[in-house]
Image (cartoon, rainbow, N blue to C red; front, side, top):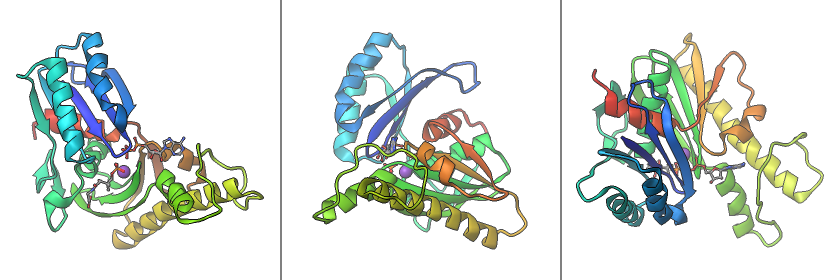
Length: 256
Ligand SMILES: Nc1ncnc2c1ncn2[C@@H]1O[C@H](COP(=O)(O)OP(=O)(O)O)[C@@H](O)[C@H]1O
Ligand SMILES: CC(C)(COP(=O)(O)O)[C@@H](O)C(=O)NCCC(=O)O
Ligand SMILES: [K+]
């Protein structure tokens, strides 16, 4: 089995072990523009892949590129499931008014979070190109969520919309919130916006589901930068890598 998480910045993939442990035998990631290089990567590993499950939120052109890369690597007979948001899957009910409108990566991430922390009240924050902060109830309902620009997207939008602000090349955690230079001031502001949104979402969820122990599941490329800046009180923080891939795996093996 091959699992693929095609986001707007990077394509992440993994091959799970067949022993049902959810351990990865192989995994990797490439920038979206480098998708074609995956054919060689997979061929060189000599993978025998019969089934592929893809979560793609990066558009139709990327879907076509990935489709031909999969055919090139594994032949025309390989069975590809294009994972989609549906009203219910793997024990998770989709609370979107129009279930198909929910980004399939968010649906997969929620399934993944629930497979790791079953029966828990969760807030799932996925910090990628966009940051999404979603509530998943202990009963297994994707309640709904928030979408905001991701950390890198926020910083880039300032460079694109102003004359004097530079493009930030790499964002690392800061020692102090009130910066004495432009680059650090942008980084500090964007980190505060991201951390503040997550803390606010947790407050809202505590208000709407009072008396329940909350867990904050943090994923996505920018998640690690935010960890030292999150003030979560009693809420347990669970930093998880490859949450979408974990969710695709859980959906594929689910036997309800
Ligand atoms: N060290 C880092 N500092 C800040 N942001 C990072 C870092 N590494 C990755 N990112 C952010 O994470 C995003 C890529 O993460 P990813 O979860 O793969 O996103 P997507 O699923 O949208 O492709 C980039 O847009 C970038 O903003
Ligand atoms: C919100 C997203 C852009 C996040 O994409 P990502 O940051 O993972 O690349 C994606 O989940 C999406 O296109 N969602 C569709 C709209 C929705 O979920 O309501
Ligand atoms: K995201």
